[in-house]
Image 1 (cartoon, rainbow, N blue to C red):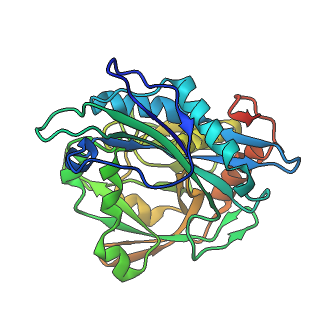
Image 2: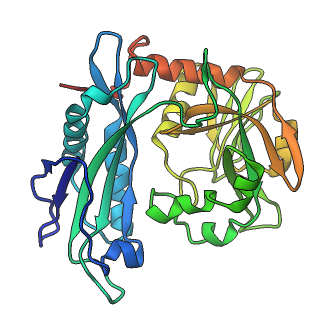
Length: 336
């Protein structure tokens, strides 16, 4: 794993690779007491010709910088971030699975490691990167041709308190805890989706849906994106600001949709629209893109059978990552 610490001027020293292992932290470390920490996630892939590459690591570096600024933390430069990810991937290249069998998940961490008892910024920060080989994110699902088996999702009604603070636009360490709900475990669902109603009594859901007819955008919309073609409309979560994470995979899927001829817009989705949707899917670094087989909301289960649009987007994205489809946007960074 790669590790470096910040200097007094806020810049990070030249890091070095170390054997993977525990790190020492003071009980009064800023990350332990006040949650001053950010994580990122990216992947290294192996192609058929044996070459290794990363997918848009600069985007993760920029997102960490944005989050660090909000958390009053120094952050590594984009070049320093990408170099650390490259070094970690090369040091663990023997663990990168064969093409189509998985990837090397790479987890950069930025934490307030210095001791601070009073509520203040930490006096020292640690930037580290470690890695682990992974297969399909949902362990109970097996990869099929063109994508994954549908996953289940659950709509919750208690996310307003969190979303009003607008802390979900970056990968802060506390943001993933909401998915560890008892209800998720009790119902054995694969994922949890959040809803909120900060501006009106109408409940909004963070999801991606495909409707049977095209729809025009609303100039006042401020949430996620919609992809519409001549006979298909794809709507997703609100725009990446405040309560929506600016996901790298999410942005990539939007660009892929453009390439396939879809018209893309970002807007808010009413929960009621789920009843009329043909498809629902989710995206993320870990999962890639996966269709949702059904959503449980207020004890009502809505099933989805279609997966055509999801598979089309998945196939295009994977094709670019594996080098089968031309990378016209310079998304791919080869590890030399």
